[in-house]
Image (cartoon, rainbow over all chains, first blue to last red; front, side):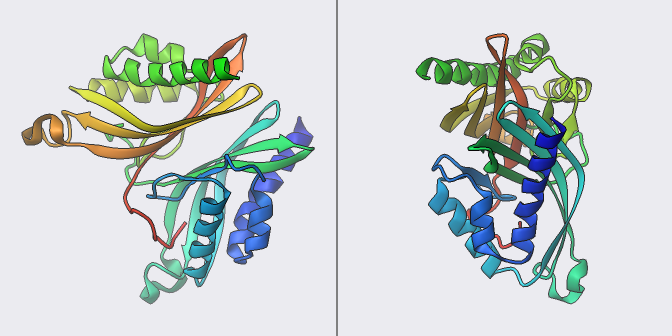
Length: 140
Length: 140
């Protein structure tokens, strides 16, 4: 079980590492090879299928001059051949406010669902969303 | 497999039905009984554990005079004893703009991860996020 958690946590880190170095091949290898993969970027609608999901990462990488993730509250929960990793993405990026340099941060909460097939954990679902309200928002 | 999809889809519908009628007991029965449940409401940070998650629903119900969900793009994908349901929540609510009556809608994209234990599918993770940009947002 500890080995599973370690393997899933490593797969989760690889997701962010591949984006930081803008390596689409590494990002591709993070994701499951089946076509039922799904992805939600912060504020985006749902993307489904490998083609749509990988194209979105390609666009994000092309439009990101610099990005660095500091993950906090990383929690991994394994149930059989499926694992959920939740984490808070604390993001340093060169995009949003060029005047602010790398200080223009943003906080995102993310659910990454990994699936084990052929002894390898791969990403099945990535759902990231902006943290807007601390709490108390009354609408679902 | 079709039976699994039907059972999971029914469990997913029960999540929304329980919120619409503001029945906390029904909502409680939707969720898994273990303490590793997790929940993200739109714009909120991550909530973890049964106590925190159920308290949030209690607060949402108490602050919602009227809510109705029209689910679209409901997709259920089963892998062993875990299933992911994604859907778009098209929401009619009486909260946000009283002058607008029930017309003040909001679109939310949601990932619900269900887990089967003792032959019953229960909710393990609910992650809902506001759809802000159509696409092309360059930050993750």
